[in-house]
Image 1: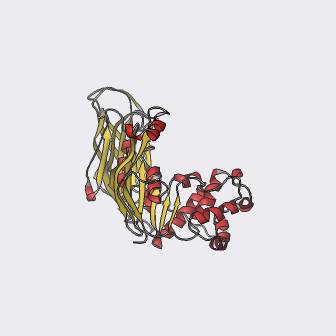
Image 2 (image 1 turned 45 degrees about the vertical axis):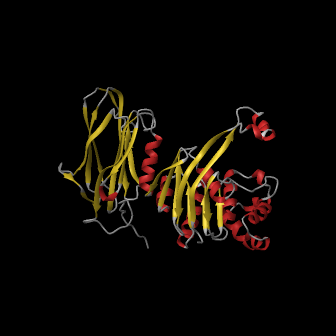
Image 3 (image 1 turned 90 degrees about the horizontal axis):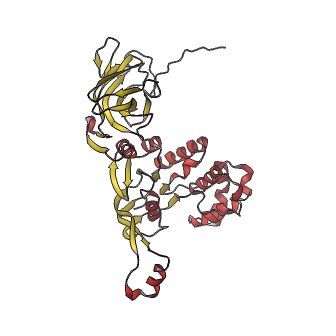
Length: 407
């Protein structure tokens, strides 16, 4: 079916030879048996992307994402399994893939366009639109070797999306472009999705994955580690980033049918988390703009030289609304002893738009959980913001203006 991607038990292995002569010996003396071992970079990858669906592919560097995309697009053949894809496919796997540095941008568009299955007549007809979207001006007629990486991305993306494909596959290349072009590119991607294009996107950008994708797939060590809602998969990915010897990463059921990710060494933990109103009463339903205090009680289960507490408020899609920690607030706790209990209180006006929100907590030794992750807990607290008495507005932030009109 047009626009469907079906990956069935795909694996990829590369031959490794102990010496430079082993390859020649294996080729010349095949009857003596193989002289190589196999290095598997992907094993038993199975998933399906329905027509019109948007799926994000994420994973730590070396997890096999780029190899998988090459297998899907046919630039590399799998060692096991198969890939089936229907319809017209456009892919951006590498920066300026198919471009020759000694030819001009215009010449490269004509050559690379033919590799994408377009005729020269069709490419020339689309050239004005490609030039207009890329916005590289007179550089279109200069050698690509003088282009910046951002200019190559502009031209490559403009060519790949000059006509709407049935399947659009994008690797990290867009992250090289400037902020303006990234915004412009994602607007085109969203427009294609509205029109029914199937999307497969590799990105470490949490906001991009969660705002565009219906589903996310996490690769880890060459296998599918998790598949599901983008926010839950990104939470688990974030936990894996901080995982070290002695760390544990667990998932459990949470409210609203969501999955909670928890990780850390366990040397400290948050035992209680709640919101208080101005009168000190615990609340779960809060009016827009109300003054609240986020309270956290934490216990140390080992002697800790330096303890930092951090929190992040996220919307229902898992997008960060605000986050900070006691490292940035110059309130780091030193020489915390085993068995000691600490209570953290953060007072602020809850200037959020109506909706449901969650709080993520972190106990670390510095400004990031990548150094010492004592405990990281997503969906540690859920609360709801409602508009009881404010002027009607839309969005996730309450930033009501005063109005002045001059005539």
